[in-house]
Image 1 (cartoon, rainbow, N blue to C red):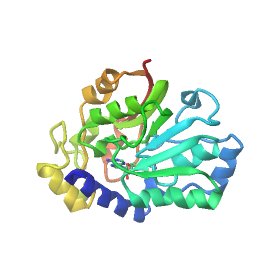
Image 2 (image 1 turned 135 degrees about the vertical axis):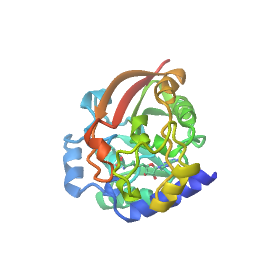
Image 3 (image 1 turned 30 degrees about the horizontal axis):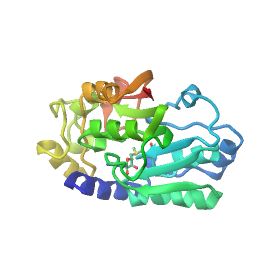
Image 4 (image 1 turned 90 degrees about the vertical axis):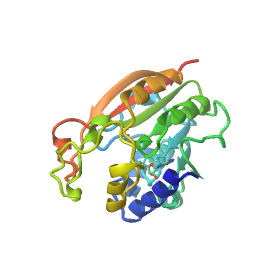
Length: 257
Ligand SMILES: C[S@@+](CC[C@H](N)C(=O)[O-])C[C@H]1O[C@@H](n2cnc3c(N)ncnc32)[C@H](O)[C@@H]1O
């Protein structure tokens, strides 16, 4: 494991223990509704994924929830009938999925690992990869796209939540500025310079803005053909910028045969 993964694993374990928004397990009622066919998940902070993105019934579909732990997406998809595996760096995040699975009698395969390395999975072994916002925690997003393309069957889909790189230009009110001051030149590398110092001050993961080229062309060049897109807002009080533009987006891609 490299320094970034080690740091981010500890930071996510801490975040998960603190019970942040990405680590609040779904309720028994949510699971009951999902079993009855009434469910949704998110990839970005607020907007539900359109049901058309799932292309029909989930029964028996082999889904990988990539960096998707925290007791949210994986239990819902399992209750909706999917054959689900979740891979995440954080043991604490995975513990939330384990707890919901035990509580609700759901089968969820749990794997602790780094999303850049899916070598434990065979080629073409998944129908769908569901990846909530998380690629900002790795320095090489193209490695993720390559691995996703390898584990998807031809025609299989990737849905991923992404941060608009512009989100990373500005500071955070917890750092003592107004959150609207240009602070970091793009592309941001969270493990270097001022970004690194700020992450350490806040006790947060190292983050990487990537470029739109790596986020979009990177998928296309990995044979993941983008077929749909939406944007989403956020209301984080520490980031006033989020009142001015939708800082997140999601893409749906199909692996070209
Ligand atoms: C914003 S959360 C997304 C999951 C969450 N359930 C949600 O609400 O959308 C980001 C997740 O990425 C995971 N993560 C961060 N770096 C990772 C890496 N290199 N490989 C795998 N998972 C990683 C974190 O542990 C965390 O569970």
